[in-house]
Amino acid sequence: SRAIKHVLKGVEHNKAFKEPELRYQKLFERVPIGLYRTSLDGRILDANPALLRMLGYDDKESLLSINAEELYVYPEDRESWTRMMERNGVIRGFEMQLRRLDDKIIWVRDIAYAVRDIDGQLLYYEGSLEDITKRKQAEKALKDSEKTYRGIYDTTLALAEGTDLDVVIQVIVKQAAELLNGRDCIVYVLDRDRKVLLPLYSNAPKDRDEIMSYELPLGKGLSGRVSETGIGAYINFGDKDDYSIYIPGKDKEEDALESVISVPMFDGKDVLGVITVGKLGSKFQDSDIEEL
Image 1 (cartoon, rainbow, N blue to C red):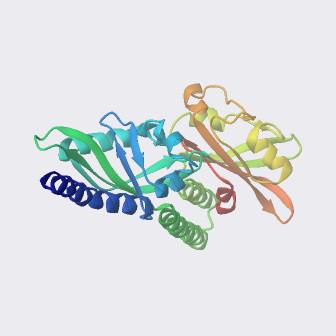
Image 2 (cartoon, one colour):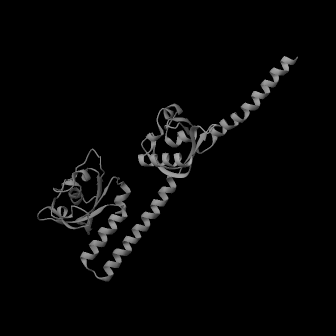
Image 3 (tube, helix red, strand yellow):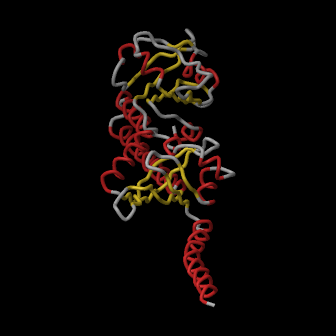
């Protein structure tokens, strides 16, 4: 009958409409790159399994319960992302750092675009994230290697050209700071009789007079402990076990944001002193001790 034909036609129409949607959903679930959809204010509306794995989430509901801006290591990256999207409606190859659920930090490359309705009204954002952490680590390793060999070359050149101790120390200080992206570096020598570290040279951009006039007690603070143990160590800003010493006259606010690393200098088996590097707003890691 005509009614039955009408019903069958409707079923075929619905089937034809749903098939592309099902194919899209299968692709969304199986593609190895992280895919997402967010609201205009950053709420995560959808995410595929690859993105869940990338960010360390076991279930989609947990990820959908947070705002995208909470994933960013640096808020200014989110601000830049938002400005570009509002201006261009598309983002191509934006690289940024995100924090996983387990607090590990990864590098990602983002491609995103704004989705609008037929009237041009903005509905939501869709995009894809590619984990580029290994590439970034390789780039950093290459850059660090170049810095290391440049430092060795410059130090060797300084020794060959003049054997002026002051010149050699200045080159070492400069290269040590550059190697670890530090703000400044200080060389201390050990006075065993008085059990103190004497500042020999510093390239600190500020508070240099205060640093150079302060003698560090052996065993006290980071540099004092390193000179006593003969083992390199570091203290990052915000660490609960912060045993660093405040040098009178230095900027206390900057001190609170400074990470410091120190390694011993040896003459055979005897510690001669230490090299200490400081930097603001970022942290050292175990591999930096080996680099220095």
